[in-house]
Amino acid sequence: MIPKSAHKDKNNRDTANSKYPVNELIKADKIMVIDAAGENLGVLSKGQALIRAQEAGQDLVQVGEKDSVVVAKIMDFGKFLYERKKQVGESKKHQKIIQIKEMKLRPNIGDQDYNTKLNQAAQFFIDGKKVKFTLQFKGREITMMDDLGVRLFERISRDLTERNVGALVEEKDSRSGAFWSKIYYVRQ
Image 1 (cartoon, one colour):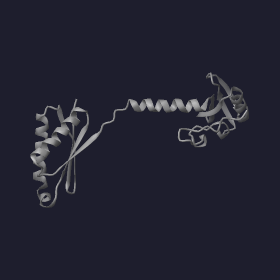
Image 2 (cartoon, rainbow, N blue to C red):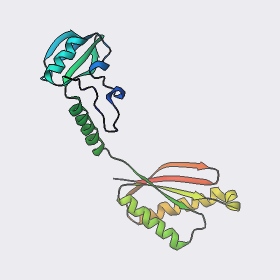
Image 3 (cartoon, rainbow, N blue to C red):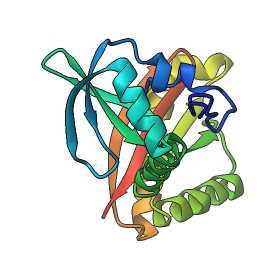
Image 4 (tube, rainbow, N blue to C red):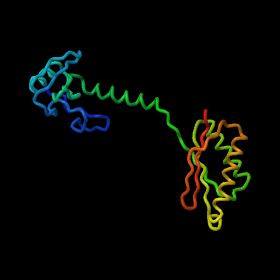
């Protein structure tokens, strides 16, 4: 019987690149072997362990090391990789990803544009996202950056609070050259 060490993973790479050495790719001479039912077969030589795996029609997969002895399990390696992939996918489903939406403004923004930006930001807050407001200053505006920026950020905070999006919290304030950014989120 030909060993199953030529398995391919999802990217069609062979298991030699896998973090689980399989069959002949296991480097240890003495291996603690666990059969497919989970029963400990004891410490066997690599040759004996491979024969046991072949008799079972499965692979010998290195799963760990205990007291400087390699531990390997007799299993269907393709099925094992599939189950691991499913577990990783399930864990990603339950992660909460917080998105940050960015609104870029100039200090002399028109009222209509300003209200449109605030309406979009209010919707983002309702959707549970954070919003980063970035003010961009040009020319002479840079010299008045402190005064203009403070007034515009106070206006943004006041107007968002009036829109009843929830308890508005300022998370981060950063300045870089002609840009001034603040990140807001709604505490729920």
